[in-house]
Amino acid sequence: MQPQLVTGALLLLLAEACFAGIGACVKFTSDSASHAQVVFFRNFFALLVMLPWILLQGKQILYTKRWYLHVSRATTGIISMYCFFYVISQLPLAQAMVVLLMSPFIVPLIAYYWLKERPSRLTLFSIGLGFVGVLLALPVATGQGGAFYLFLVALLSAVLVAVTKTTIRYMSDTEPAARIVFYFSLLTAVISFIPVPFAWNPLPAEAWWGFAAMGVLAAIGQMAMTKAYALAPASDIGIWTYSSVVFAGLFGYLFWSEPVTMAWFGGVLIIFYAGYISTRQRLL
Image (cartoon, rainbow, N blue to C red):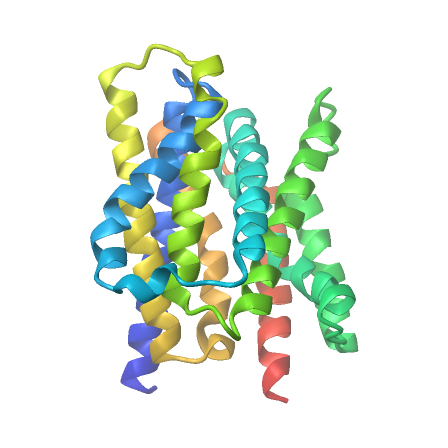
């Protein structure tokens, strides 16, 4: 196996561990902070940590003629965060992280209608299989009163994440990665601050440490993911993106003693297989 492939896979595993860690921090801070505070401070601390790297890019990072796309991406990103953070506060961490695994299967559908990219039959099959895995992993049929409502919120979050990813693909022909990251970090911090004064809760010291950890983990995760895909093709290492649910299950068990059900385990295996089909078929 090529050393770059191994390094890329390890970096992607590190990135996914960081993203699962962000989910754990969100769950931890949600006990004392409002959703508005969690969303804002997640974005604010991420901007703060990444600011030195952003400033090194120079003045050219500010120049854009497609500001409307940056605003659109930031807006869908914030709404998605609200939905996702709500799901995290209501479900065990391992099940909540499955929400993010729906978005890769939704992207081809959005790209078909927006970018006119026609998905193959194998891609459509993997999309259907992925949703079967999600339905197994999420507790929709457990008899809980709000289970179906949670599924709809989770689905909305995944759709908005997919819209955000498709927007990045659409603007990447003129917007470099550093500019996209800069405007997303800046705009999400500014927009998400608006409701904070109306939903302010006194915060204990532990919550501030949790918010700071979110920023550090977000920065490390973004950098590790960017480096991973620079070293190895997405078709070769992309399957490791789904490892975030494994890390989430581990964190949930260690910090909250959350059990991992057989339904969740079976759903995750199906999602892994669907992701494998989706990525490997691109090489055919």
